[in-house]
Amino acid sequence: MRTYAVSGAASGIGAATTAMLRDQGHRVIGIDRPGTSVEVTADLATPEGRAAAVAGVRKRTDVLHGLVPAAGITGRTGVDSALLVSINFFGAIALVTGLHDELTRGAAEGGAGVVLLASNSITGMPGWNAAVAQACLRGDEALARAEAAKVESVMVYPASKAGLAWWARREGVKPEWAGAGIRLNSVAPGATETPMVAEMRADPVFGPHIDAYPNAIGRTGRAEEVAATICFLLSDGAANIVGSVIYVDGGTDAILHPIAPQGWEVSGIEP
Image (cartoon, rainbow, N blue to C red):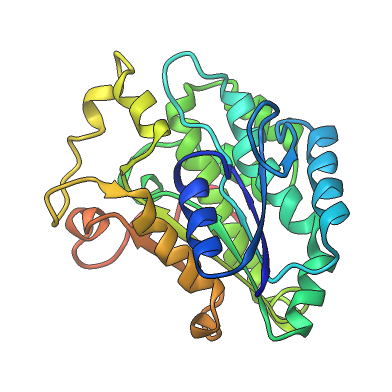
């Protein structure tokens, strides 16, 4: 039995991942918003809430074999763009960095993994706000929030997810992560049947676009399909996978970019 922590554990991909890990016989410490039925409740939008989440996990274990920061909100009409970037990027990274010691101890027992939740909107949505992603990579939350506030949240969402994917690639190969036996990777789901996508479908402006993207399997994804990929990346079978982004989108990205994925080389973004 291994011990994992999953944020956003009360619904969607986080809940599916939690259930799958538990079905495999592992212990999972769930993290989610106050009012949800999980082990640790905290508001990941604030530094105080993030610190409380880290403390809540530490209260329950001193060893983690894996971490899945799946908590996040989507970009849609009426969603605060600054709030989105605080939860999606800074909330996730605070958990990863805050629980580094626990992950290091897990790595000493045979390896540890972190899987961040990116999105195929990184390459599937042109024109998203690169300045937000750059501020995220610099760790400047005030600047990221200020840049995010200038545009609609729908264009901030892919920026926050690009920030996560690129952060995992940049940091994952460093001595304090891969060198310490902690593998950082991310998954990039397409439209997946979760409460978040249900909210997007109800959006009067952006809802019609959810089912407009092409895919090769003729349907949207299921949360358990993304969870299966996450669980693989946490497993010993993924011991040689570091800094990767795995698309779980039914072929949408491959259809849109049949030769090579686009969207990684964005003007203004520096390592």
